[in-house]
Image: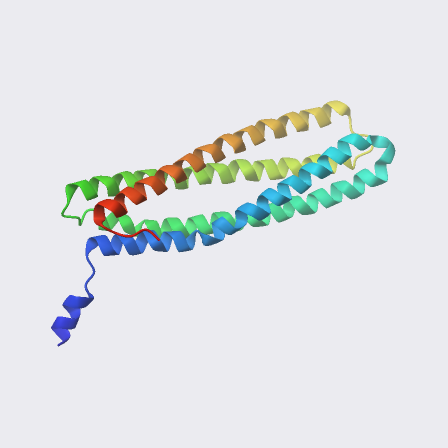
Length: 203
C-alpha cells in the first residue's frame, strides 16, 4: 500500500512547474496591491507640488505646511515601494525552483517554451531592480526639493537644478517601468503558451 501511495503522490514535471508558476502569482499579490495606492499618492503629491509653485514665496507659511504634507506622502510612497520590492523578491525565490524542473520535460517543445519563459522572467526581475533603484533616487530628490521649498533664502538656480535632476530621474523611472511592463506582458503570454502546450488550465 505504501509503495502504491508513493506512486500516486508523485507529481509530473508539468504539475510541478504549474505549482511553481501559480505560487509565483500568489507571491506577487502584495506587489499587485501596491499599484493603486502608489498612483493615488503620486497624484496627491503632484497636486501639492502644483499648489506650491502657484503660491510663490509670499505665502511662506503655507508653503512650509504643504511641503511637510508632501514629505509625508513621499514616505508613504517609499513604504509601498518597499512592499512591492519584497513581494517581487519572494516571487523570484519561488521562480528559481522552475530552473530545475524545466530540464525534466520529455517534450522538447515544452522545454523550449519553459526556457523562454525563464529568460523573460529573469529579465523582468532585473528590470524591477533597476526600477526600484531609480524610484528610490526620485524619492530622495523629491524630499530634498520639499526641504528646499522651506528655505526662504534659497537661490533660484539651486531650485532649478533640483527640478532638472528630478525630471531626468523620473524619465528613467518611466523608461524602466515601461520595460518592466513589457516584460510582464511577454511573460504572461509565454506562460499561457506553456499552459496550452502542456494541456493545463490557466487560473
